Image (cartoon, rainbow, N blue to C red; front, side, top):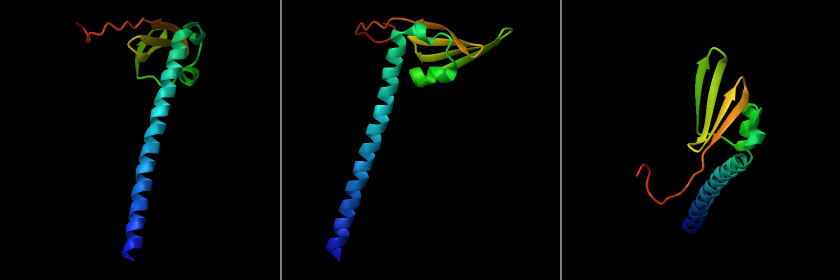
Length: 111
């Protein structure tokens, strides 16, 4: 009876470990897919003009931040993917894309 209980416990521990690694790999794959989508969007920014927010999310993945400003002409929303890639949405459509080149110098930020 003790041997059966120990083998069941070992099986349960092994299953839990495998499930944890499977979940982590799935989350890592999801983040990688979003990163790949953003890279494709950065290569073809002209194709983003006139897309809706939903179409933008489908094509480029989830963004990190949004800023909304209300003006007399309506709302202007800045969708931030990174500090190097920002999309502006006016009247529900993408109106402009700001992109800066990221140059790695090997130094820390603001040095």
